[in-house]
Length: 232
Ligand SMILES: Cc1ncc(COP(=O)(O)O)c(C=O)c1O
Image (cartoon, rainbow, N blue to C red; front, side):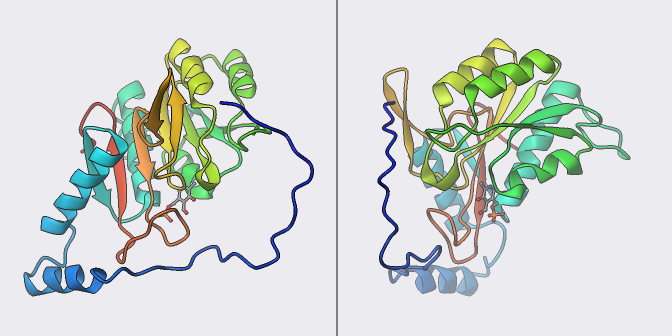
């Protein structure tokens, strides 16, 4: 990736709204179909279809729709924790007293599950080009905390982080990646010469359909995907 630093950025003359829903005509039809067929539920034909389409679009084997991106991140981080540290006792979190290396510039839903699971987030600084996790800072964190085995990294504002460098560092340290692609569905990254979708790089990958993200849905459905195996 090539980056150009420029200082002559001008303010927009017109306001750009953070979130302005666009409806294309079929939304009510699908909602009514779910209602009429008694599938206004967490399962059903429309959900199966969106899971299939999202998995195809992102280039992963499976997609699982959950209630929100926040829930997807919690599930992903819990599963990563179980994979590395085993199942927790019912009265303790999966990450109990473990350090998890996390993006420091992100929405708090990326990080909260580390606390829910009794872990300790170590914040990794952001770099200039992408405003995402700095590979040099991640490398330094592994030098300080070689025991860390999970990295939560976000791609903010539709801009992928430097995933090639970040993934190489995680692989070298034997750490799993939870990729928070909530804000970057549809953003691709040139990875070893091949354009790949964000949301396909992690061991566990999450996207969001919240109204303030790239795509939204009427029910604010959210998907959590795993690159190689089924999530749940
Ligand atoms: C980077 C990031 N992660 C996670 C989330 C959580 O997604 P949700 O609002 O669907 O729970 C958001 C929400 O906008 C987000 O921007």
